[in-house]
Image: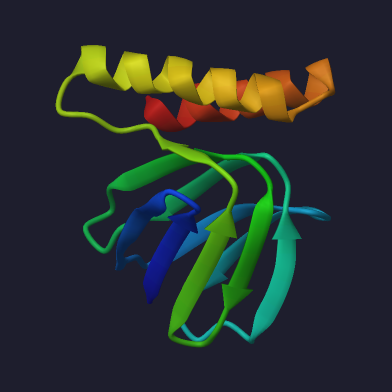
Length: 124
């Protein structure tokens, strides 16, 4: 399925994935190919994309919306930080940017700690 993630500053991600997980307003949910149509709000958190080769793409987001169709998913969010890079130092830098974005977006310390743990777990 094709996934496109867009902020007011432009595309953050566009590509094929076999699975996608989102921080929905009522809890985390997953999307696979041929998912039933859905439009819902997203809370600050992380989007986890599983590519066809099994590699993960982690993107920290502020609030936004997701539109799911059977063959594609569109995500519109206010800001995002992809937690990727060519080496360990770049990934560490992106992780710090992601944590800063989420700290500003999430008012609850407990919820922030949960999201921070998910980012660190996903990177490993």
